Amino acid sequence: MMRAETLPDILQTDLSLLSIGLNPSLPSVAAGFYFANPRNRFWTALNASTLLTEPVSPGPDSMQQLLEREGLGFTDLVKRPTRGAGELRVQDYRQGAPGLRALIERYQPRYAWFHGKLAYKNFIRYAGMETDGDDWGLQRQRMGETRIFVTPNPSPANAAFSLSDLVTWYNRLACCLASVTDLPTP
Image (cartoon, rainbow, N blue to C red; front, top):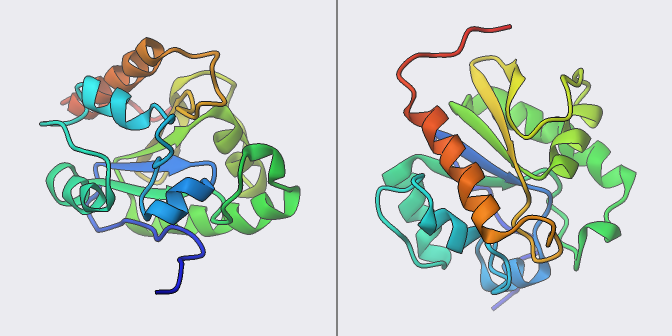
């Protein structure tokens, strides 16, 4: 069996939420699913949050289950897997950002969920969009009807944010998703 070179996008029309990581980790590519590093806190935070109707076990089957049940898709800004963010180069962002922008414009998820400011800032910069600040959470900028939400990266390399912090941010995102009233466009 030939090993995958990267993780495939997990997408469909009518996405509620598109999870956007910086790039796939080597353990994720080897395992065949997003956030597969056992030290990554994504799955623990996701299951502890109010984003899901019921918990899921991390694994390749969970990706399709989340897509169908929750309308949760997955992709990355950069598709090249690395051991860590320090291995990424400007050229990776230049190549990845326009493709991600086109993907978001095509699928128009309700929310584009960026894991970390590094992913969001490099997307904005290299997709040719204007920045609208440096805050966590809901951004003022939209892409068509898609709202943008930024949470801390759950990577084990991002120890500045605890599991509790991640759950708090995921719950804030869940509140936005559950909101009946759309926020006005600035």
